[in-house]
Length: 86
Image (cartoon, rainbow, N blue to C red; front, side, top):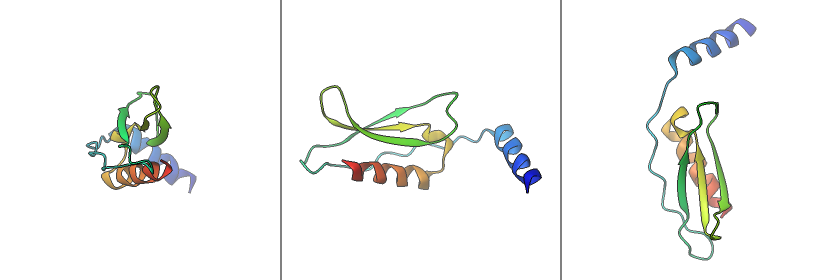
């Protein structure tokens, strides 16, 4: 099991697969405000993540971290999940 996990990590790093970043879905909060999406990438970031927050103007926003590292289906799941937080 340990050998398989090590092999998977080695192949994953060697391939450095990049996925096309999906278009964000249309999202509105409970006040009817449109939720904005912003893509952020990090060379050191190892996972794809999303964060629902308010921006400096108190408008709803979702930050999309390292989406190029995950397939379309996971990107969409994270977008809808974070949209539900608003």
